[in-house]
Length: 400
Image 1: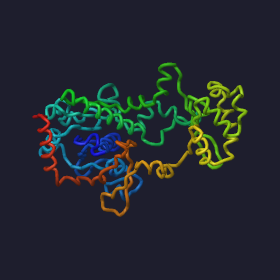
Image 2: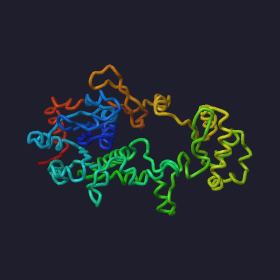
Image 3: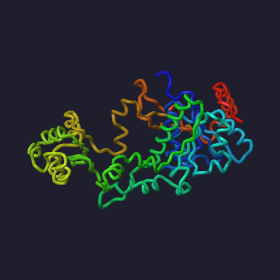
Image 4: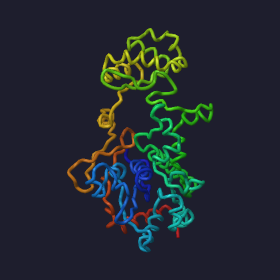
């Protein structure tokens, strides 16, 4: 691979915390140049978030480091006339403007869709909010947990006794960022046909409901109200987490031939023709009895042994790992998923950041540089603006 897919694309990133920075991180990994615009003296709130108080005080909290590698940081006060002028020059030279203010905030400070189009008709502007730019909830504040609750996601997480539960990571923020990155990429491709930019309005609530897939469609199509099932998969049995000699093992024997192979390898071939388990719907109806029979057999060996045996035979199975165990998987090392970078403050520690899980022409897309200190690229602001403007003029973009 000689060039990343978004090489030459310039992203002006006004976002904070997670959904927006996660979006621009993925655009950076795909080759875009991302300039992060931050408030002087404060910066992205994520700079002060994370489990390490020393990093938080230094303005490079773990939450910030996780999705801001490869970006540049400029500090601009959009209430200051000179900074506004520089900001407008950046807009004129940008391909993408990304923001996740509450709905209407950018318009109130003078940069609504109409003004942005005056400055740069080819600009793809993208707003990520909890509920979108319109509708009765558009002005309400929203964080990931709020969206998890409103989407119904929490109601189906856990068991009948423990639900509703929050998913263990900010999944709605991540989904919102991925949805925005997809929309931006599509809009950039569309601009090649039309020559015109577009305004994108991304709702985290709607993206999250879309990603919930069958949990939503089973209700919409069939009227089935989804229920929390803990570590079990409602669509098939045996499909869920099972007990072994040393820990949990996920098995998804969703097809008949997989079920047959599982029973034979587990030493319980009598289950294959048992009327309670002989076919898919019967197995779902008698899930508890089937799980009990399989657990009694599976506890004879370790999760690792079962993973290797069942996977080799075509039955999807894998251990249930902790995060520290997961990040050390040889599979991830083989594919170059993590990148080692220096800390931005010169610390001797090594910073590991994740990739995007995509290989292009067989090569991973590693982060290109350490996350920036607040305002790290302020000294090159004039040069950066000139370079962006020169490229936009060469492409035929105009703006006033």
